[in-house]
Length: 575
Image (cartoon, rainbow, N blue to C red; front, side, top):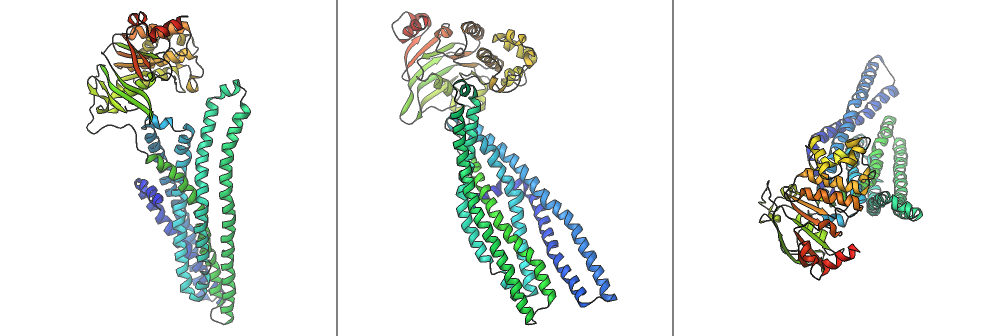
């Protein structure tokens, strides 16, 4: 109930639509209750024998019945459409809310999450809200009100026969409670396994080239089979319980019918009721047990909806890792002075990646981090942009603790070229302009020239309107890297981070990228991370990292002439 009430609170913007729908449901229910009563009156008139006077009553009742059926068109429309309208607007709002929440999480959250599962929560799990609001809630209200209304009518007709009609109800309610306890865990497993299956499919499609290259189609298919089997098993367990529950409910409904017919016949034999009452009861009987059966069916839908809703609320209730501090400041014009003061960082407890790192770089200078894989070079860059917060120590920009700067303001002043170059599915122009959507065509072209990709683009049939494909699959690694640099150039930020900008390119392309970097030096602070030391020879300061610490620092000429790790790395690469 706590989950259900939470979901209802989320829909407060759409209460008016739901109220209109409920009013329509109430009206429709009332009309449904009046109809059998009129039919009973008509039956009584026919059984008693028609006269000229009763014929007028018969015609009046008939027109009234026709009017009821006509009004049911409108009540049915509003009772169906309004809840659906509210529900789909709510689903849209929840999907945007879940997405906005997800994209506000720190990189640590995504490190420990599967993309397919997050997509499943955003699409499949949120869709259960529609079922809850457009079907379960309206139908629950209809069924409960119909059950109450019909019960009152039956007791006013004959309390003895009505009491007999209610005998199966407690048994049905108890079986519904037992069913709900049994089936909900299976629906939870089912929703989670659907997310796992989505994640496996996402991984396989992302790595389809590797799957085919290494002949791992069968193994990849087996992994999908395992995930799909978990989903199917959970679904079949739920269906098995359901297959027992629903026939049981139907059995007790039929028991109720038998009781009414048998007991009603007995009362008629005793001349305590006449035939018209039995006819009225038989007409109302379907209205009486239909909501009982309906509620039993709704129990299953509610459990499935709540299982999905719980996964959605789990996202919405997850604390955001990186947030603005109270009274954070907004800096529109960062100069680019950067300082690390005794910075330590751990992704996990007791595993330090950085240990008491301290250095400074003046605005407009280029600083480079070099060292073996896993020593913390990329981590340093991620701390500058507050993808993560330091475990200890402080990062300063222009003398301000970056945690005191409004997050959006901080990142607006930093451009990044990431090691794992990502291009969106769209045109080259769209991807370059992603950092600055308001950029003109001339500005996009100039950024491409600076990044050394302009010539390649102009050789393409569609030039800047060339489609890159998903993750830039239609372009070479070097082209993607230079488009990424062009995107960062167009950002025109005072701080530029280059994370392995030449990691996946040939020597010729590397020379082009080095030339692009040289054009950027002097007018912005550049943080370069590289394995290839040729990329950072012109850096003003080079920091050599080992085991999370700075073991050497200086420019290329200084470091190459003194014994140490930099010289060893350089000579090894030169060989």
